[in-house]
Amino acid sequence: MDKVFLKDLKKQDQYTKFFQNWAEQEFKAHPNEKRLMEELEALSKNIGIREGLVIACFDYRNLNLAFFTGEVERLTGYPESIFRKKGMEVSFTMLHPEDREEMFKFQKIVFDQFHQLSLAERHTFEFSYTTRWVHRTTREIKWVMAKVRPYFIDKAGNFAMDLHIIFELHTPPKVNNYDWTYSYTQDDGTRVLVTKSAPEKKKIKLSNKEKEVVQFILDGLSSKLIADKLNISVNTVATHRKNILRKLGAKNVGEMLKIIGSYEF
Image (cartoon, rainbow, N blue to C red; front, side, top):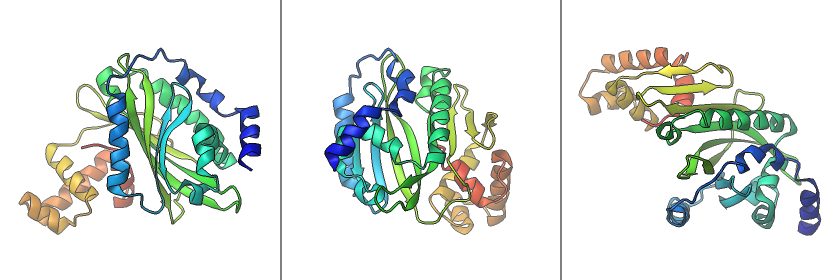
């Protein structure tokens, strides 16, 4: 089965062609590449691969899947051997057909935006997406969400390799198909967020105290615990939360969590 499937993939290479502009970057050597890959191996072992979690790296220098670990065969129906030989092509093959086109559009947005940024801004760039995987044998649809950031940015500032942290969603999201966001911090410290539903750049400036509240919310703390941690009243925490919702353009805490989940504070 593997040989037949690999032969079909080799004949088509129909999806990696959409990433040719990534491969045509004028890459420079990365001095810490070996150490970074060793750290990735150590990270995978230290966190343990929980059910429904996949860690993966796409290498844009050769359009290959440079690293992956997790329950890929259970989640996708494709054997690990296939991913090791033709990982990038397989990753696109298993996407729901309706999501695949949106993904290709988004990768161009990411590429174009990334190369407009200063080198410092590029190092803060990250994106996320929600999509559907179609299991190869059962045809079951599985929703997943990925958080992605550059893992190698070479000396010339090229996006050489990314790092995907992918989670299986056991409850389908509100979106109907491929959804995405990207964000980065400008040189003046302003965080910029762009979403598929709001493609205009949204600049968000949170105060230091609001950033602290956001981090505690991400850590799962209640308003009472946040108040205790910051030595402020619960009403003051509520005021901070309202201001954060307003600045993020979120209608409720659920939307707030979705937005701030793409941020580093």
